[in-house]
Length: 100
Image (tube, rainbow, N blue to C red; front, side, top):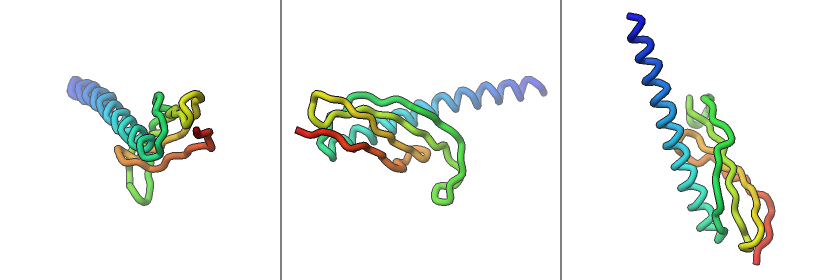
């Protein structure tokens, strides 16, 4: 009986890593799409944090924060924060930046 719990724990950890990978891919798609719409050059993206949280709008969901770099003029780089609720885009917090 104890082996079933170990197997369940291993499967749960495996699922968690696969889900985080899926969230990272969704964040990449959202960041690139945002940069396309705003006519910015996308540079890189990195996960800051992920946690299980409860939200009135989405319910019990994984909340993830991502930092992504972009360029408005092709020479400098700026950082912005992208938040996801599950696989859905929550918000994009972008600082003022230089444009050509």
